[in-house]
Length: 358
Image 1: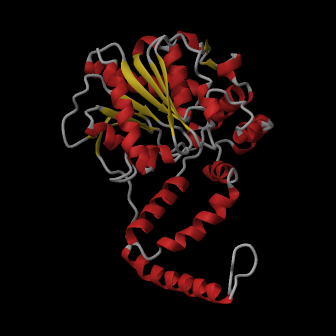
Image 2: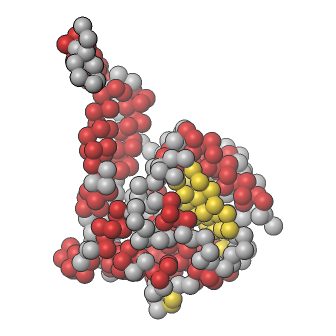
Image 3: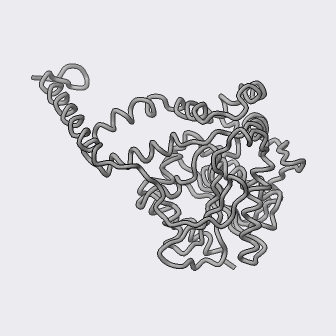
């Protein structure tokens, strides 16, 4: 029998699909019994510095690092940093360690009501600055290498502009620079937000509010399609664990310190301060022209949170005469966890740093 409509459905094909779907669901009941607590983190680590809830971890690979200069990874506030070390086969950290880099990651912790009045100065000068100063002291060197990711990249740009002598090489990954590009849906939404009313009402910004905003950027894909697709892996314990681990990361989000959130929205999302000026960190103006060290700017071609144009706007704003860009064929999450990312991203970072080792 010929199929009905442009998709070619027939009663027999629909019946077979229904039976297959039911079989997957039955198998899923058995598979779920085989799945234990979902853990994350593929690499051994040790705490080396702490300031309150903020912790600096050193990651240990199977061999000693060969890089002379440590690499500090600064992640965003809105999610947990273990995305860069999610599991054995999805770990940018492990890839860097295997290539001889000496890797540190700053963990922001979980802000609570006592952190309501933390400001951007605390995150940038106190926490990033404290971690950088610790590494400078331990390694007895003036500057270290910094890799800033997403919002952590914006923070790293601010820190480096205010303290250029403390950073030897700067890498930004999926970092927003121009917050007013036409394809930046999050930026367009946030520009109309009464952030004073928002923060004065809520205090700290609940993680669930932030997650809802991000999910509604791609509602069909993130609310429906991925959960329908999950049925296809219900009979595969490894694939199901991978799915659940990613879900755990998505919803394991910290609340946002209210005052820092207010300042970030006003100065970056609404004021577009990197391009228009006006970013003030603890009474000091951020001037990207102070950044005179080598810069590698990595962006994702299909990034729906930080469009390529937003990241590429960094070109020409700094005082560096050694500026490079690297495009990655993937999205905002794929740049950490895809198979392509494991092959390409750590190698590109390592090669770039090795060429500038001195």
